[in-house]
Length: 137
Image (cartoon, rainbow, N blue to C red; front, top):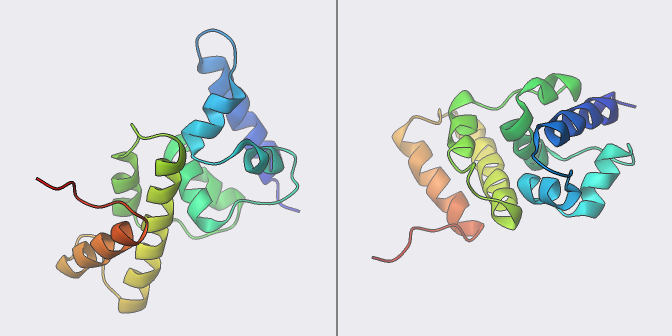
């Protein structure tokens, strides 16, 4: 099996030590955007994160996770977009990761980069699908 569980445990411990006061596992899960049962499964090596979940973890701990899981790194622009939503927590963070992952798949199929005009449309559609839309003005 992958060495992901030990890498993830170390990352979690570093995060935990960086927090003021007592460690809060629920806050950690909320930061990642996934339920405690899923995060515990990752920590205990019961299963590995899926690709959209990997993006969420990479947004917090860096792209080393892609090497640990032997996955191709996402386009840097997509990671930059994800990080621009760093203020979000919980389910919204997970939705952003899923939308960006799906957009990356579509962009790869069409051979477009994240900075192209066509990518804007792809990203917009993926965000709409996941319930992330422009507010009405």
